[in-house]
Length: 471
Image 1: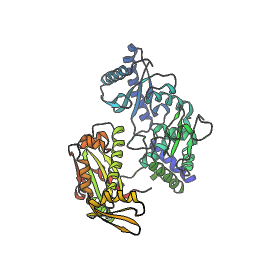
Image 2 (image 1 turned 180 degrees about the vertical axis):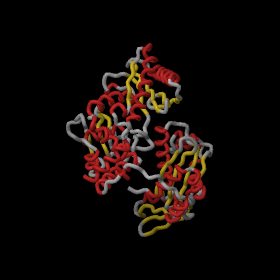
Image 3 (image 1 turned 180 degrees about the horizontal axis):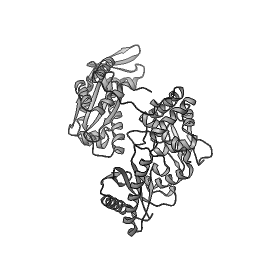
Image 4 (image 1 turned 90 degrees about the horizontal axis):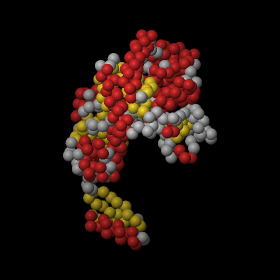
């Protein structure tokens, strides 16, 4: 690993905060904490700081931290939410920042203050993680556990893992990224002892066979029976040290799991700084056009107004809807080769479907039961004889009937043109259904798809990644 040592030292130098960056952050934290204390003291409330800066694993390009306002356990939930937002607003006003209401399991204040992103989150001060009333109540326990178990000498290794996953596009456990959270990166480094040991182990990972339990909550050393159904289809299981029933890696998708395994193998074979820093991507519309022509498939891109919901709701609904549209098309024998989703902050959302078969003959063949089975034969004839013609091949009935839909685009348009109630009934997710109901959608032609890629670089890169995807 001699070559890797040199690479890691150079990378670490680039991603470790400078003295000035540390000093600037400390000054902002000090000011925010003093302001918070002045506001909550008359209310007899307490606070705690959270974020990677508390254990020196923060990245210089992430100017952010969290202030948790701790409420007594018997505080009514509705009152906690209102008071939490009120306190957040007062802190932001006192520090002359800007803010908006964001949502986890309940609303909180997301602020921009002195160039830093600060989340001001109300939570319950519970005695143990097993008594939490919402997911945010768990964060102070995470902070405490990491502060006790992450040696200072491993801070750099955590940064290396964060940068490694960031370059792969899999850093973040949000519903859009489906990757590794900062907390998970810390746990993995604590478990393996260094970044180099991590990549050595990750290069040998097998999906569904990696079980990490730092506190040995489960004595067998594997997923216990009572949790197998909950952790089903989760390729990596890392038991939360403060919650024995939670998999910290639950959001980590199978595709991203394999991407990390391959990147670890490739890094060990040929370590370089390129694994930690993405080169700016080039976007060539002519290249995209050429790729589409070579594939000889057909893209159906459904474009509609982005629903006004938080990302944690939006992305799962986009994915569920894309799978449902795939199933609808395949029910009518239009074979879907692939599908994906994209959305911007404000404006458009996209569902992309790539078809192997998009035009079909006017008739279709249906093979029925053997002629020797009287009841089933009669049922088959009663159903299909009025619709077309029937005959016997070998020992089975066969029918030929008129096909309802010959064109995939027309079928898709018809399926999406139902009123709101009908869209929901056929499995279109609620916020997506609301956005497209009343025919407020458009199915883009290839020229329009390429024009959109030219106009919106993020969509262009999404299309490029879809067409070139591989692990």
